[in-house]
Picture 1 (spheres, rainbow, N blue to C red):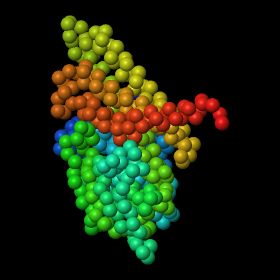
Picture 2 (cartoon, one colour):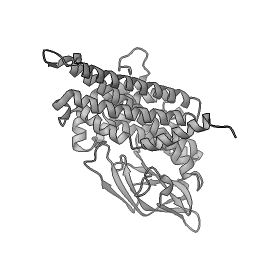
Picture 3 (cartoon, one colour):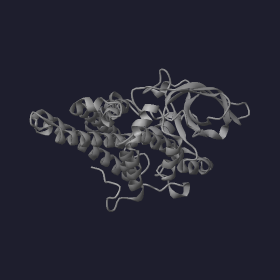
Picture 4 (cartoon, rainbow, N blue to C red):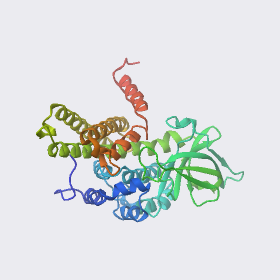
Length: 383
């Protein structure tokens, strides 16, 4: 189980995440109901230094190690997936810029992302291009003199798209996947807020239309052709990692809430926890949560070996943690009964959010294909 805010030896930013999570536990239900996190809460989270905290210090980050970043995501995810989502999307864009941006791009954008003076969005998904991002049709056209890019397309399900100041947009230049940064105050950017979705209701999700939006050519990240395989892949890999840890936090929170209720609620003259079916259910979700945590730690250790490492371990961790959170949410609601179905129920929110986590940053079925392919390469016949 994750450390508490006052645990001896907890890294300062992990302890800060724990404190922020504890302060957010009660108001998170209000944010979910309102469909947004208040702007002042987002600013306070930025001031903790948790946004893009794994960036090097020269760019304003704290150089947080993968396991520490994971623990911070688990603390936030354990109370509010939208809070964890803000950490996720900010660090996704920062990670892509850190690895593939030019020296000038890193110096210009990364300190502002780390400080939270800019809120980032990752605009990849389109109609017909969800898990299959190779099918994106957003057009990125270079001007005749090579000084400008014109971006035209419609992006869907952009986390914090309602608030984002800058978008990392995946599109195409001719037949080559291309990634470009687009500030949302430029003419031609239109936002359509998404409300009442199944989960992540406070995450400021939006659909965005980019109608011939013009940006300087130096807003392109990496050469044409590298937009998906390099830039977007780095962002998605980083996103999966923090989503995995956020799901660990959700699963552990649901286990704790279900166990506390089962110990206190009396049915038939004995605590609910002493009923065999309830005891078995609690055991299953506790073991699943613990297993997901171990896979997340293993992914963190692999990622510590350097850029581009631990991709398969991260996919496995995200797959297991999303499944564990979904099962823990479902079964915790069952244990709590009517209390788990109340509008302000934390396990109810986690139940809804966990279903979304089984889809974003790589659906479970897509993860299965990757894991299977990895096994075949590892154990199949040698050429």
